[in-house]
Image 1 (cartoon, rainbow, N blue to C red):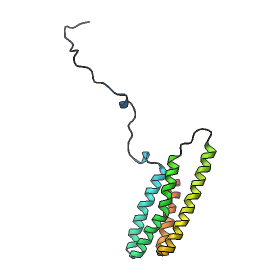
Image 2 (tube, rainbow, N blue to C red):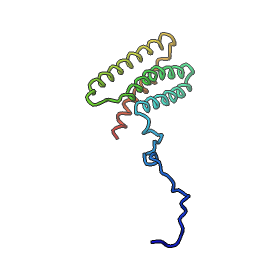
Image 3 (cartoon, helix red, strand yellow):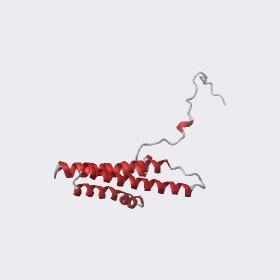
Image 4 (cartoon, rainbow, N blue to C red):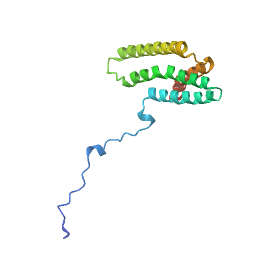
Amino acid sequence: MRTGAQVDTTEAPPRISESEFRPRKRIGLGSVPLAFQIVAVQGVLAVLLATMFLLLSRAQAMSGLLAGVVVIAPSIGFARRVAAADVPAGQELNAARQLVGSGIAKLVLTFGLLVVAFAWFRPEPVAFFVTMIALQAVYWLALVLARH
């Protein structure tokens, strides 16, 4: 049925690209792998503890930061390995072996950095180990919070 109105054929309707139908990626905690979230929390906690130890002495604050390096440096490598793990079907056992190997490498690197820290820098033991234990506890906290 025609109403007598003329249609302007020179104006094309707006085009919709396929990308507008795809969900948009949002940057937030959901886009950051859990392993890197744990490392980030460890970094923040190390700085907070070092700031707290700074109230006592500069040596204790530096010891806290050194403990942060000893724990976080190997954790970054492990987090990269975990985040990069894309396991094809049928390769689960091989991926598990590689993950265990990465965990052992992280443990050996942490121990090596611990030895180097005490041999070269001679940190204050209380501040160093309090920070180190607190940073290791972040793993346990992540397990508890991940269940909720």
